[in-house]
Length: 287
Image (tube, rainbow, N blue to C red; front, side, top):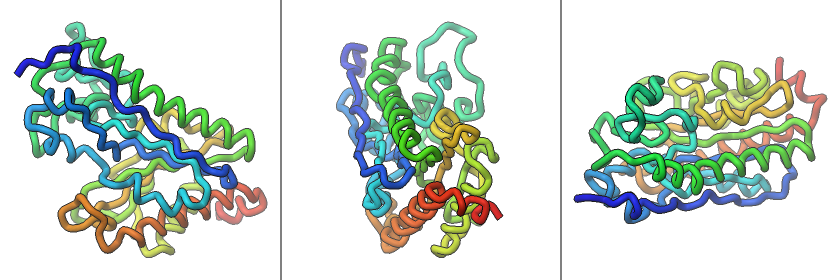
């Protein structure tokens, strides 16, 4: 099947769910998008179901209790298969994007097929019938990727004008692996959040009954790297939750642990938000 470039149109724009701004916390959900346009499905080798393993299923619903605190949330509705908002704009894979010989990115994520536009999955092989051109890539960036990062930047700036110290919680989920913690807290090895923020996040999750790990195997992606500036009071943490904690056995619908997981994310957001509001509490949290 030949897919004409003209058919490869725009992607769904990200959503902003506005909050009250009472707490200095912003939620980000970049990988739960389920708005698969027909042209994208036709471009895939094996249809929509072959693209769904790239999703973080239902994380946009899992954060509902945290949103109920009055937190704003930026949600990607475009699927990760089309454009990954948690990758840098230059993480380009020549296997899936037409570009001059010798160009492209040689980072490990691109080599694994998980660049700005994912190329393949370990279990499912190559995703696409053909490479896309520069114009198609620009359309995807302009309609989904750039608006996502613009919203995140604008919302963090608004919160910081009001509160001074702010936190970005970038919410993800991960496949189960043996001996893996239920929640991996990523701060890119201490570069995107003050130590007390990451430590308080860990302790709050453990009080809620979740096992935790720090930066292993997920230290955090482009979103927290791009928007964090701890020395200026902008902290950012990536949360990776084991999907068995909140999904059913098929991995597509809420499971028995869904509300428990939602309460844990709520507790992290509320505890850290209140800590950032109270400067006198910060030295205690850092001990």
